[in-house]
Length: 295
Length: 276
Image (cartoon, rainbow over all chains, first blue to last red; front, side, top):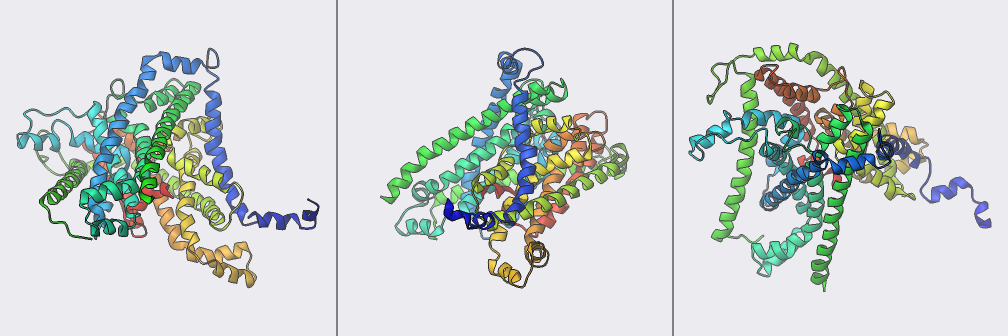
């Protein structure tokens, strides 16, 4: 240490990358510590200080009342099928679109529902999917159905709205991962006589898998936090009473912020559990083919 | 690429295009329904309305006090845009140019608000904002909206700053510019296209940000999208066409800015921000 004393502190810090310029990051860090990390920790502690009962009373109440713990199942039952379905649709279509020269028009159209947001999509679907809406009319004119299908104020309304905002998101994310793969790899496969299916199975899919895992996580987390469409298009008292509705009602209808924080923490935990599971599975799946391919 | 001419490949391609076509047709028809309804005199049980009118727009304008709502919306949105630029761009510059201990942790801090959905962190955030007295008024809404937009600006700007040659900055330093002068006279002009793109995306995202605004807004600090939610929520009180007219006003407001933003960025950038 005695050798360091002769070097001024300022220079020693600068050598480690800490100087006046680095301090520019401080306002942003402080802002997020105050408004992102602190509220989360505050909520966590608040959830252990229930209005009545012991430390764990909120969590005990949540897991003993089917009206509350049932929301986890309800939300998963919406979010998981939507995520799997949008991903299953997005992968082949992204493979198709990747070969297109001019993708901009398509990607622009697909970015519209994401930009407009869930409230507008819910508003639009209320008209479009209604018993007298164009969707049911077209199906009836084509003779596919004889009486209007009920698609509103039930599971399907929420499901469809999640697909409309979720599919473009999943698709564009998959497309951006797919564009990142070096086309030379696929060309080499094609030159060696691999057909489209073999190229997909042995070259592109293994390379895409890490990106797909991230896409799955992001799409799932989005779908899991569904709120406006579950209220507007679903049956918020019954089949589509998702976990965010339970949290909202606790906070703004019962004014029980402690309970609301507990629900929010449970919501975050379920999301985290699924994300960790997917990323762990990716680790298991991905090491295999990459290791084998190089050997 | 080797051209594949097998019939199975062609069928598969056709199936893919049919799917994407089906999706886009439904999406456009949904938007068209809202627009048609907003101009309809009466639309019950037919393909097209009985007649056309524009009176729902003036009805919506006065019923939902859209003048005030739009004014509040743009005040909030512009405050968010300016503040997220002021906080985000310098931070992005520091992160792009310096390696320091704990940088990974700082990056994680900026990634999390983009990965965690707004409704999850919004409820504890709203609780804190209500207890500190910010929520229920414009300042609370602005603060809540800044939580995802500051990291967004940072993550969009870092690669943009990294591609600027450090020699330019060194030259400016040699000629005696301090950090502030360097920012204003050298970096800002070079970074302008990137800043513009990032801030336009922030603008579009904030206009459409429902959850955080919904959780923190009071009666006088609602943005357009929250006002639209309440109108749809209480539908039956007002004429459907009047709500649709409001929805069209919201769509036009948002899409104008989207079109401007798309002049500067690729559409996939709006989604793929979390990849970095």
